[in-house]
Length: 375
Image (cartoon, rainbow, N blue to C red):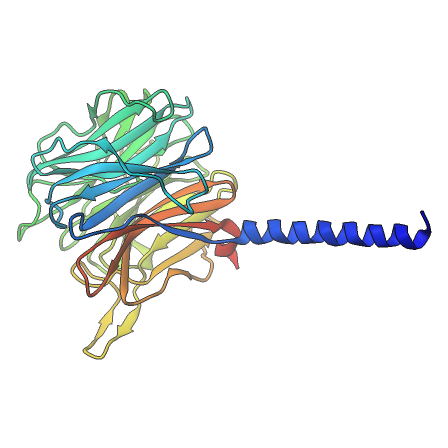
């Protein structure tokens, strides 16, 4: 073959290789968006979900499926769906947990243990003074689930948000809970407490410390383990800031809760650590002033708008943060109760998506390359 043809062939090969790399890079940088469960008039609320990768490469999503009304005490079951294409599409829904409560079952946490087993946590609600956390186990990668075990046997109203369970480096499991005697009274006084298990979730003990905060109290806690072995607890409050506390004994006792450095309205925040890099990712509703033709309002409040949905990362365990980025920025939509799962260089998010003018809450999925948060 003459040199001219060899050169032409090499150029064509190089162009094809470059095109292939460009396609691969574009796919790696793609943000994937879909709806796991869209709300309808018959199913007005699809919320508080979690997503976990299965061993066959598919994704399992589970969530609170309200089928008669959208308030917190309306009937609901736990439904689930699978995706075999990274969350671009989702298969038919199926029931993961039928409604065994006098009101509902709701709020899902899915955990892959180091043993390989899966744990599925949910709340069973009977009355405004009787709400408990339960857990079921799968030893065959979500094909079947064992009988439920109660995590919070005491008589009270126990709230644990979706996607809240963590397993420490020691193997201990922590379940952060907000508890009050009765909800929706003029004297709500939530306190946070952490339950823990040292036998892979088979038995549970209640920690010693109950943390308080002003006004309605300390609500909807989340946990993250630090490099030095301490555990940080973040807490939803009505003070305009996230509150925080530390534990030096793996979640049993805690320092006095105080305001943290991050402003936030009365809305849950989700803080997680990338196990591959140690980088922290915070997703929350920041305090942002929105102007409408009717009035100007500050961010979210309990009865108002939870918008926008923002994210920041920290490489030094919360001492400094990257500039915030908007996961969702449409002020006509509210977003909350975020789950975050790290998988294949991506953050897999689920959160509710609800038009301000409507009464239907859908469950949205977004898969974001980790590089997006840093640029």
